[in-house]
Structure formats: C-alpha cells, structure tokens
Amino acid sequence: MAETFDAIVIGSGQAGHFLAVRLAKAGRRVAFIERAHLGGTCVNDGCMPTKTMVASARVAHLARRAADFGVVLGGPVSVDMPAVIARKRAIVEGATGNLARWLAGTENLTLIWGTARFIDSHTIAVESRHLTASEIFINTGGRPVIPDWPGLDGVPYLTNTTLMDLEILPAHLIVAGGSYIGLEFAQMYRRFGAQVTVVEYASDIVAREDADVRAALRAVLQAEGITIHTGVRNNRVTATDDGIRMDAEQDGQTLSITGSHLLLAVGRRPNTEALNLPAAGIATDPRGFITVDDALRTNIPGIYAMGDVHGRGAFTHTAYNDYEIVAANLLDGAQRRTTDRIPAYALFTDPPLARIGLSEPEARASGRAVLRGMLPMTRVGRAKERGETAGFMKILIDAQTQRILGATLFCIEADEVIHALLDIMAAGAPYTVIRDCVHIHPTVSELIPTLLADLRPLDA
Image (tube, rainbow, N blue to C red):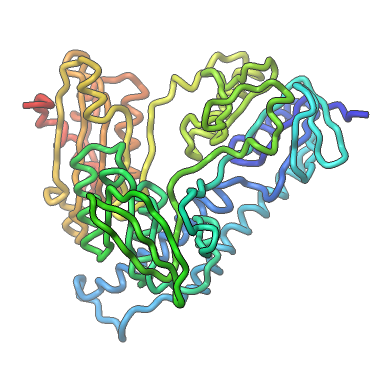
C-alpha cells in the first residue's frame, strides 16, 4: 500500500532541498528522496569544490608572480595535491553536514534514500516503498556526457567529479572540451603545475561568446602555457605505457597528443533515465530533458521539474530561482515565470568572464539601434595596481530607450562588478542612472560610468 504525502521532492540539488523545507514549513507532509548525496552537483562536484580548488590554484599562480610585486620567496613554488584535495573535501563535508542537520530538524519532512521511479503519474517507488502525492517535484540534475569515441572504453578517463578526487598532479592533462567546465579545469591544473592541452570540437573555445571575448580568453590561457586545439574531429584514444594517446583530425591534418590523464568535459546530460518517465506520461525533448512551461510545470498536472533536469539555465543560481518561482506561485499566490529573469552567468577563469543579457549578435538580430561602450582594463587603475590588466568591459545600450541590453566583463572582479549592471537592468532603469552615480575610488566598479560616457553605434 502506498504511503500518502502532500508533496514528493525527488533530488536534493539547489532547488530541491529549499523547496522541500519551504513546503514542510508551510505544513505540508513532504517526502524528500535522494539517491546518492545531499546538495546536488553544486555542493558535491560543481561550484563549491571547483571554486575551492580554483582558489588554491590562484594562490600558486600569485606565489609564482611574487617577484612582480617585490616579494621574495624561498624557492620554487610547488603544490601539495593531497592537501588541496583535503581542503576541498573539508569544505564540501561542512556544507553537506549543515544541510543534513537542517533537513533533520525540519518537521513534516521525511528524508528517503534510494532511486525514485514513477509507477504512474502520482506514485513513486523507492526500492520496496511506494509513495503517492498530488504534487511531485523533479530535481534530479545532470551528469557529464561520455562521448562514443573509439577506444574510450579501454582508457581510464576522468570527469569533473573524479578529477577532483585525484591526489596526484597529472604530468600532462588532456582536456576534451573548450567550454566553461573544461577551461576552468585547464587553467586550474596548469597553475597547479601540469602541462595542459585543450581539444575542442567547435571552431573556437566558448563558442557562444562574442569573438572578442573568445580571442581575449584564448590569449590569457595561452600566455599561461596552455595549448589549445580547435576544430578537432574524429577523436579516438588508446592506452599507452604511461598514459593516453589521442589521435584526431584538425583542418584535414592528423593531430596526435600523448598525455598522462584525460578529462572529459564535452557537455552535460539530464538524470532522467532511472525515473521511468513514460510511466507517468511526462514529456521530454530529444536530448532527454524534461519539457516544462515558464512556470516549470510539466505536461502532467501537479508535476514540476526544476534545475538542470529541464535544460533551462543549468546554473546553480537559475536552479535556486526555479525554487523561488515554484514556491512563490504555489504558496504565495504569485505568478512568477522563468521568462522574467535576465540571462546571467560567469566563467570562473582568472580573470573571470561575466555575462548578462544579449550578446552582440543577439543585439544586432533584435533590430534595435544599439550603442556599445568598450573599455580595456589597461585604463583601470585598480587593475594596474594589482598587475592584472588582461581583458575589457563591454556594454550594449538600446539607443532609443536608454536601457541596458547586455554586458560582457572579462576582467578582474568581473563576477562581482557585473551585478551593478544587472540590477539596473532588472529595475528597468536607463543606463544614465549608473553613469551619473558617484562610485568609490579606487575600485573596478568606478570605471563603469567611464564606460558609459563613451557610447558609439555598435557597427560604427
């Protein structure tokens, strides 16, 4: 006989645990199902652990640059990888422990460990238990794509998850994938001391970015000693005595790379197979992502999907916003939608890349008269003081409405500075509000008014 709950939440990623607690505190009896570990990708093998290790890599990088700042060290800089991994694990375990205590102290919430699968549209099986509820929320996240390259099944490859448990420094890390995950790891491990080669299928790295962003990011990575190959096709791999050999084609020529380790960072896929979605009649797209409307409702009444599993956003901050939308609509009588949010994300290389709103091609395609402001970081005092003048700031303005259409910051502290522009966009205020605002000196943000004071037609 099925156990009856008011709500079932499947998966404890960013949207899942916040929603489960909010529903429980609202007096609903909630079954909260988790297959492997609390916290989802962000806490366990995504944002938190990677940024912890990025911080270690940055310290190593700055230590090697000590002489640039007049600081004398005692000898060559080396990295203790077991200590780096131990620090990462301690931070992750602290976060998951806090989450476990929070859930355990929440009334009306029952945490159930196991793999959930649909029996019908409102019945879930977890091992031998059957659960039923009028509302079901799917938050099962995603995982790395494993390509079908010849020879891959005979090679000990790594993913973002397994690489962060590797307590040795690869002599030569081959990174398959020149997008956000791949490039963060490429720079990180280069700064740890590994030789790093990036291979990317597309004609350039981070293909969705503007051409000037791609060029600037490539220049930064190559200046640090990272080798980048783009337009790479027909990959095949074999094991060697001391590592891995990759053979491929690039511009009609044979490309052969021998490395000690291989990281696969060629994309993500949703964790939907084990759910038995056909039993509930839940629609998916050709890639397996659950189809939702802008209120995160599936095609089956009472069933919602949040986070990476629906393919809209695939960021921790958009997953959290999914929770906010669902909770506000169900519990507060709101009518919030995913279409209300402004696209915003960052690539946490050093310097970071931060993006909001439209890109240049999107702005052109909109048919608007667009103004653009550009400012190289060589003009920013704070960047010069810290010896980090790589990159630029760029902003796009609707010439008629004076509203910000989008911005790209590839520069020191870009991931923080971008929010000043994002907030102006969200407020629907004209760009002149921030242009005329007095900012604190010396900061990176103080150059935003300067950026906005010299706007020119986008294609002039």
